[in-house]
Length: 352
Image (cartoon, rainbow, N blue to C red; front, side, top):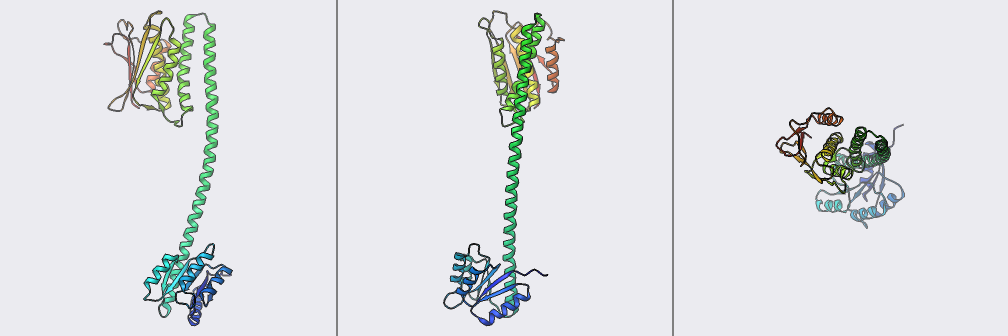
C-alpha cells in the first residue's frame, strides 16, 4: 500500500480555484483539504495536523496576513506556511515573509501556478527534514559527548587510583631502603643505600608532579628540580655544615622519561658536591642552572666551590658514575666537566 502523501491545507475564498488546486495537488501525490475563509482555515488547522498550509492573501473578512498571524499564534508547532499573492504584490509577499511565512508563490494562470506551489512545498518540506536531521545529529552528538564524559571520568578515577598505589609503592621502597641503611654497619653499604634512596626520591618527585598536574605529558623542570633540591638540602644540610642549593632555571617542559633522567643526574651530582666538596664542619653552596640555548637545546650545569679535581675529571667505576652515564645516554648526551672552574662544574647538554 502506498503511503499517504503530505497533508496540505489550502485556504482560499475562490471555490473554483480551490477545486483546481485540490485536483492538481492530489495528482502530484498530496492529500489536500480546503478552507473557504481564513477563520475556517485556522479552525481546521487547530483541529487536525497538516504538513503544509497555503494561504491566499485576498479573502473577505479576514485576509491572509491576519490568518497567518492567527495560525502562528495558535499552533504550538506550526507547519511551513506558504503565502499566495498576485503578480503585482511584492510588498505584500515581503510583509508575509517578515510575519513568519516560509515562502510565497505568485498566482499565475494554468499549470505553472500548481508547479510553483509544489516546488515551494518541496523546498519547505526539505527544510523541515534538514532541521529534524540537524536536531537528531545534535542530540546524538550530545549523547555521545555525555557518554564520553562518563568514560573519561571513569578513566580519570582509575588513573588516580593507579597513581595513588604507585606513589604508595615508591614511598614504601624509599622507607625500606632508609630502614636498611639504618641497620647496616658498613659505611660503604650505608652510603650506597642512601644514594639509592635519593634515586628513588628523584623518580618519586616526577611521579608526584604528574600525579598532581592536569598535564601528564610534560613536567615543569623548575618546579620539579625545586622540590627535588629542597629534599636534598634537608638531607645533607646540618647546623654545623649547611648545604645551600641554589636553582636558576629557564622555562623548560620535558616529557616524564627525560625529566626522570635529568632528576637522577642532578641528584647524583648534588649529592657528590654535598659529600665531597666541603669538609664536615664547613658551610657550602651548590648551584644548579638549567638554561635554554638559542638552538632549543637544554644545558644543565651543577657546580660547587670545593677543591675540584686533582688532574683529570673522574671516570670512576662506582654505581653513581654508572647511573649518571646511563641517564645521560638516555638523553642522548654525556656529562662533561669544565676544567677552568676552580671547583667542580658538571655540564650536560641535550635536545628536548
